Amino acid sequence: LVPVGRGRLEPYAEPLHVEPEDDLAPEGRVRRWIHRAGAHWGRLVDAAREGGATSAFGRWRDRVVCALADSIDEQRTLWGLRRAQHADLLFPSGLDAAAARDALDRSLRASQRHHGWWLVIDLLLFIASGILFFVPGPNIVAYYLGFRAFGHMQSWRGARQALSSCAWSLLPSDDLQVLATLTAVPPDARAAQVDAIAARLGLEHLPAFFERADG
Image 1 (cartoon, one colour):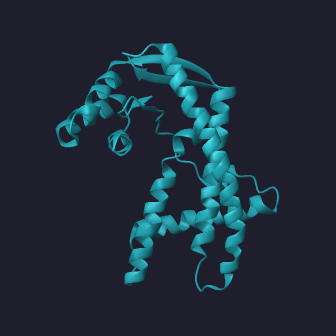
Image 2 (tube, rainbow, N blue to C red):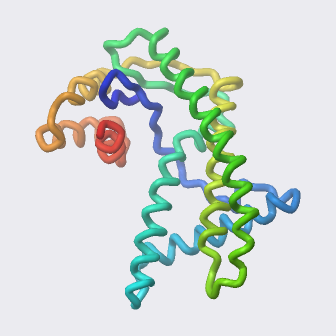
């Protein structure tokens, strides 16, 4: 439970990478479409990150694809909770356990609502994107919307599981308490301390998340 300024606390984890083709059973026409779109999107992201485009349009497209992929990746905290029966929650030691659990539950309920609505919206947009079939080349819009729908479905499932079926152990963390005091410190002045906290917690990407969420 990461303190990110203005009294806010955000759940954060670095779960194992999840591939859409490993977790989305192709049952039903729409699910099969999303499954195929997610697989195509993953291949587009891999190609974009390799940076092999030679034309100006190709390089621009790769930058857009990479930026969109990074925004989707931020949902993976919830993805890791989809089947969790037990989870440990580290929270700033200056906070009592009841307040930490309340902050977690409020965040999970908000996430469940948010991802549920966006799942419906992206499914409708994904179906509508079929009108772009006549555009030459891969239908990047459909692939992106399909993978977004997949991501929102996984996040909704993770939030639901975390609220209804997961047993939580609440563990106070002095490192997170120190991190809470750094929200008022300018980014350049706190960078080394944030990096050290991330290393002790074993969270490689925590500094980037902390700066984005606190911005």
